[in-house]
Length: 422
Ligand code: AMP
Ligand code: GLY
Image: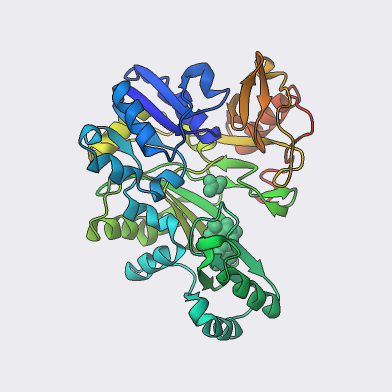
């Protein structure tokens, strides 16, 4: 098969790494890709939301399968574009239709979906500029902290958690006034849930599903989960506290009703579903749905998957996931993100990376890197993800940290405390 992966981060390098090992993979392209994907696939300078340019490329190279990494093209309807375009209709696109992608593209829609299908989540109400007064009154009925969420995609910045009522009212006013552009024209206010977070990954064909390994990511820049939110500073799989009885609750109360809901609503959903959960007492609640794999969670989930990835995705497209049995590596996987100093605020790019060829016993997935004048240099905030596998996550982390000692770029930073809360 000729395969195209859309995206340029650690997630996409990880996909490319495992796809390239499949015997069925004839030609592999990544658009736009990074220095890591460039070593195992052909990078193509295409924007992931330029559907017309993607169409031309797919036809030109006789691409059989397109795997969509990030959410933007999905929310903009790339799957519908493929099914509505004669020449693309038979291309296997992995990712949900626009209606499916709304589970991530609109927090209000996600909450309505959960309410409709009795899926446990925080109580909520949503407001617009017209109902600002009602929104303020609703805040007064809640206990702090107050959780405000921009309805639309806001590059991971659209959720605010505030301790003070006056601050919450002020933020609500600013959000409805366009603080996050159109994304915050509607704001969901929800009950604060106190617990520990984990993520569950599901591969579904819209009828059947397979549970992939669980993972926990570390979102804050600082040790002890302090400071600004990032795209993710590292991840661990499996999540030690997600034991069999807790997983049974997740599957029965959340995963099955979600897949049933997609089917009842006749939503074409052939792709990954990433469910962000919080464990309150002994019970799971949904924090959010994402309609794609996580980054850096992919860097620990796929290394534990022993089943051929390309065959699995083909079965997904063909709605034959019920005929597949997954083989999962029992070992733990960890990944540590190396980021540019200053991230997630201002940081420099173009810094040469050294030591890549000296890494042993870990896999380095590239995130923000590119080739420049024969060297590999930084080109983003998150630069490299160093993944290791071992009997338990502490041993795996130790391997990653040992290899990180050999890697260098100017103002390289990473968290040394991953797993501190487990
Ligand atoms: P989201 O973008 O919806 O994943 O929210 C970002 C982060 O905000 C989550 O990972 C949680 O840490 C936190 N969060 C979101 N909703 C809630 C809630 N209802 N209660 C507590 N924390 C929340
Ligand atoms: N690591 C969180 C995400 O991919 O959204």
